Length: 504
Image (cartoon, rainbow, N blue to C red):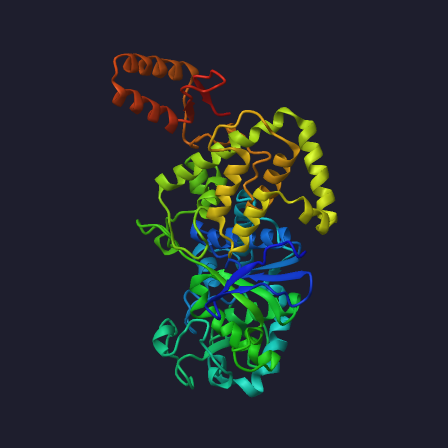
């Protein structure tokens, strides 16, 4: 970063305050994000966490840091809730489907990766798969067992009284904040948690390993401590996850990290294993279809099947600050799609001059190779964008800047300059909306189930024209809505003179 850059301020959940980002290693940013447990498809609320982490990573790159981002894949160890006993999510799904647990993990891992691609989320530097790190998990547990753990018939447990400030991240001063941890006979403290779970006598699991504490599997909390430390080293810069992780999973991770690193209290945030802990808030859907336990839940493919481009959901996420609760509705998704379409139409003007686009890309590449030159080049509008993103990833404000620079709210038809195009491309790199390639046609609502012929379209438009001539606007609007539901975009007053367009 240069002296002209705006300081990146991030909200640290551990301290509950905004703090300037000061990397552990100069010029680098090392980030770990809690990834999915691949026992089922991710719902759109799950995917909000990865849109947030992606924007964080893109912002760090924009600010000039060399980013190393790690996202884990949990394919063992996560129980059906945050308790210390019960069924493993992966084992449970494999039994229900009568399939190999390895096949279950592979299928849902690929489904998750498909959603990542559809939402234009950048690939992290490392995908860490939990089962690839079991030997390291056993070594980690052996290293802390003598001072911090005790063994019961059910497994090896971490004694939270052996580290300072357990639960500070969750602000859990009493056991009420940890009520999801069920009592286990023999535990010294209710908040103690399993880091190795023994396979019960008489049972055989598809995923189990030999350990000093018996044959079994690692605990979910242990996995993330090991994978983050192995790849990024302790302490690293930023640990992200959903706000639900702030209550149990991350406090348990922190305790393990303190034990492993022999650190003291959390008045020094780096003692937790990461300097900054960041959490996105919930996506709320009032009908209750956000829970996978309901059997039918909102996943990205459902949005696609209903005809919505997946980047409309990314836009919906960007319109709210990551720490704000976001309510999902189909009306809200439609509004986000409309806003994205306006940006796409405004941005499409650059396509009329491919030479300008190539020149803008070339100049941006030069900027990437010379940060000092890049800071000197920054226009006022790009500095305004920098200020927005440096304010704890204020994407709602950043979107306004993007609309300003490309004239999306004014129907810009001319006046594109190389500088304008460079600003637009650079901002879109950070927000990840893919506007350079996204066309208006891409964003038409085309439900998977829609079937309609050209003759049917023409007949409906004729009826609509009659209704409009008779000033029967209710009927006119109803016909338009019917056509839209079948993938037909009626474009009244379109500057190109189209009356309608059926998506491919």
